[in-house]
Length: 252
Image (tube, rainbow, N blue to C red; front, side, top):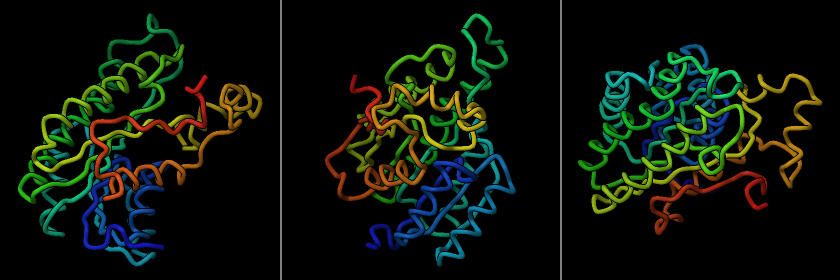
């Protein structure tokens, strides 16, 4: 395996499970030193332990991306421990119980907006400051196929992910002159704990994958490979894009 990220510091939010964990471990395998964050202290520490067992340097700081102070703190810890920040994967996100928009409580709307959209804004705010001082970097935000198309029953989620794409594109134009490339990954259905909670019944999962030409959900490691590509020098001419990895769902 190549060591594309040797000597680089990579920050990953939502690193405690799913795509975040898979991506953190993929970065570790390619030589990165890791600054990890997650709302779950236990899950985040477990990912950090796995990264260290694989030979990587890894720090973990429990935090909530909906809080500006927590976002500032994790960037500051990366600078204190590793001396810089080269890559950030803003991946933390939540979903709500399925239902039409008229049934979404106002408190639920504000909660998902705070994590999925404001959280990405707050992370980028402090990451960009650090990267500008270092002369550049790469940021990848987790959007979703739900940021490209609408899906009945998850309106609030889709609204936040459409917002992440708009935020990504505009921020990319703001900061490309600073040497910071900002892009997003848009996963389709992926076998993460959050998604599988929705599909405990195998029949429901089969129905959910029926519209995907590949006929299955992605493994988190497949999405991790897309993130590493966007973070790497191989993607040096990709700016302000949402790269869709959805098994063909939106090719219809």
